[in-house]
Length: 79
Image 1: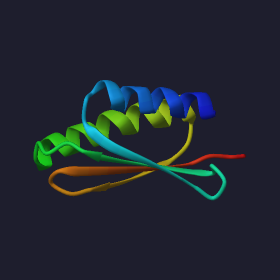
Image 2: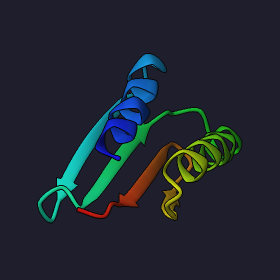
Image 3: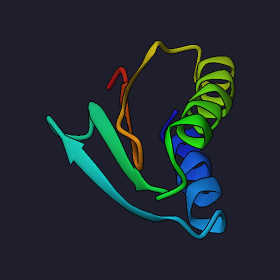
């Protein structure tokens, strides 16, 4: 499972967006904060793409928070 999270991080890194990864509760919760600065519509598209990829890849429900220029993705893993 942690391997897939690393793949997700690779995708974010390749996109060349500024991002930060937070690992909380001994690695059980991973949060990615992506700064895209491309507006609300692009943020929504980005959210839909990551939601499809992560939920199908990890079979985990992911939580998303959006602003016009930022997307926050939170994934809770089993340890």
